[in-house]
Image (cartoon, rainbow, N blue to C red):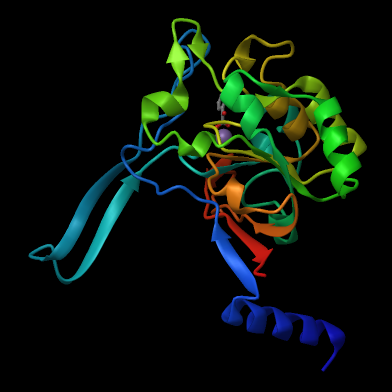
Length: 264
Ligand code: 23J
Ligand code: MN
């Protein structure tokens, strides 16, 4: 066997034995899944997911059960493609159907912001914070998923998850300098979060607005939103697989995100 064949064979053996564990980073997707709520003055909103039954072992289909889904591309645990944002709209490989499949797999760097976020729901991750992580764990490699752990996924109540008041939503996210550093100095694959979108709740009022979407997608990078179980990942050493549906010219899609981690 070639060494690559050995690597793959070892991998499936290790998954079967539990030496490599598979951690599901996806939330269950349903009609109650929280969807981002944009102020109507800035744009139209995405509806919640709805499920319509076609048949359930009945007159409409005696031996089969199936449903029709109606949902936005950016619902629940989902992937943001570069063409989702005006800054990334012209990449020939920037849609869900044109992104090369090898870009759906990458090493993960997990930055734990859970204590900061517990103290301040509007906490912003800075470039300085990222560099402190690098001093401890080593340089973020090119092509890495950078995942911001906030424990926000533990807010299982939709109102607490969106956390809006009269001034809009309050949830953590990255500051402009952090996303510039990750996209330009580190060449990451993308940025993933536990919150409803990759930008902070208040980011519509930042300059530029929605810096994570603007900078990451402008650099042909991806986003992952509404992740869970980031507290089960090591700071480095996990491999993340996040492959969106191959929607024609899609701007994103719900996705089953898997992390492979050392089991012992
Ligand atoms: C549309 C407009 C603003 C934002 C978003 C979508 C998302 O967060 C998203 O799901 O990509 S901030
Ligand atoms: Mn999105």
